[in-house]
Amino acid sequence: MDTSQINNLITQAQGGDDDAYAELYELHRKTVYAIGYRLVGPDDADDVVMDTFLKSWKSIPGFNRKSKFNTWLYRIAHNCATDMLRKRKRNREHVMAEDEYDSRTLDHFHDKTAPEPGADLANTEENSIVQQCIRKLDNPYRTILLLRYADELSYAEIAAAMDSSLGTVMSRLFYAKRKLKKLVNELL
Image 1: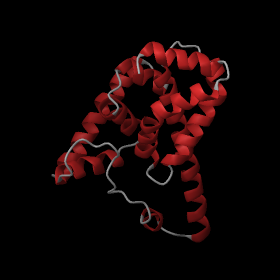
Image 2: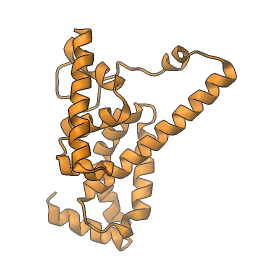
Image 3: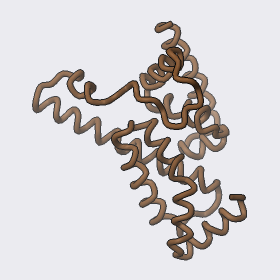
Image 4: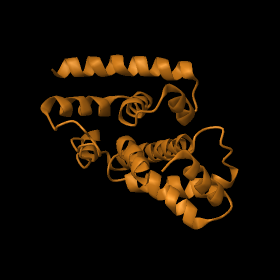
């Protein structure tokens, strides 16, 4: 679908056309799911999709087109995933304090070796190591690497999606690559 058709759908959705919004949902659902999957894992990715599209549906009348629709939507998805991670961390700390479990108990239930959706590379041992290392990165570094290389966003689009300056994006990407390289070299 070309840009003019998407802009037409946005205009219709801003006017209250639910069918137009449903088409926007179908166009972007898989990418929003992939963002959620990468940031919160397979168990909560569907919740990120639901929260993202609910918030964007409520907010679309105020969408001012200063950025691309997909950049705006990815920012909402990133925020929803980040909120979910914060809640998960609070809940995990609460459960651990109550039950005195060590961190291995909760981590046991999360499949850290699950392949990323849409991965183009063959499932090689090296790819598996890189994916493991990406999961070990702190959230800002992991997010910026995935937006740049998995979602192929430009620096400007990443800056808009993460509500950061272009310089911050470039700096974080530099340090993310450095940290990833160090982690991979430790395992190889």
